[in-house]
Image (cartoon, rainbow, N blue to C red; front, side):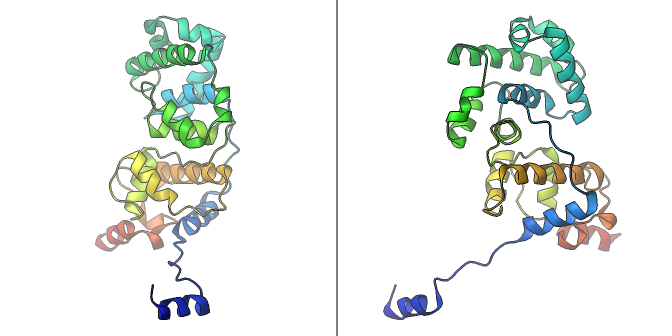
Length: 243
């Protein structure tokens, strides 16, 4: 830095990059459109882990029902862990890819027990968020979406953004992220997240984006003309113009 640069910096302050306020604007528009999301049932980390393993490509109400039925049928997560894969598969047959999820679920619960000595994830509260996520992602079927859900939605309540298929589609259409996987999309979106957003705020944002993906920004025949984000969406503007 030369003397003139130093003088300018001392007189006017360091040059700041323009603030990207797209996420707060999106959040506010979705709140106005959908209203405040219902409060989440905040589960312990292990229960959230089990739920998240089951939830991929499955409707929320189906996953909710399957989790309730697992509690009744097995009584404890240890009993679920020790059940044959075939029995677990029958118990979760309502979710998509039940055969693979049954194998992943049993294997993961066994590995957690082997590595910690008992079947719990409560101990994760003592670790940094990045360490928790990398540890969780070692288990079968547990990628970035599952680890983000566990740290953000459970009683751990850490800052993370759970990126599901709806989130991928919506953010790509909005031009917020290029076409990428969940991990890269989350990393890019977190650069846009205001520093003051809490874990609860990120949870709320996830819920609003998911709701938009389920109702307006659908995979087939998105309802761009009625979308609350039309004014911010290059894909929607192009679609409406062509229509």
